[in-house]
Image (spheres, rainbow, N blue to C red):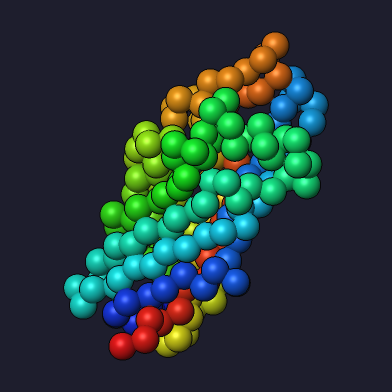
Length: 171
């Protein structure tokens, strides 16, 4: 599958995009799943094929279907949303492969701490007006200073699943 993405500005379609987290807790026996309700971003494909952009997640929009847990996740123990309202992934480069994948390199910033992050995304749809990327990757939350781990109940690795639809920005 050969994929070609048009040059120009692209905007994240928040209504057709999702960013979700999955984390094993309680000594690995229980998996907590959540979705960030508010995402945004955009990017640019330059004439030379280089890709840059940013995906932004409103950290306070986390929804695990448990209000008490969500409030704890928003606290200083985890996302500290009062001080760090956004989680960002800044794309530095993206290489489209002939197999329908994109190797994306950038920086993930959580709690104001930026770390290099590489992701293999699958291009599930691409035409002149829209591109949809699907990716699943893991991050170690302790690398971002998220170290709360009462009684050894929380491991460090969190799985992120993103389905991101970008549409051509109006000229």
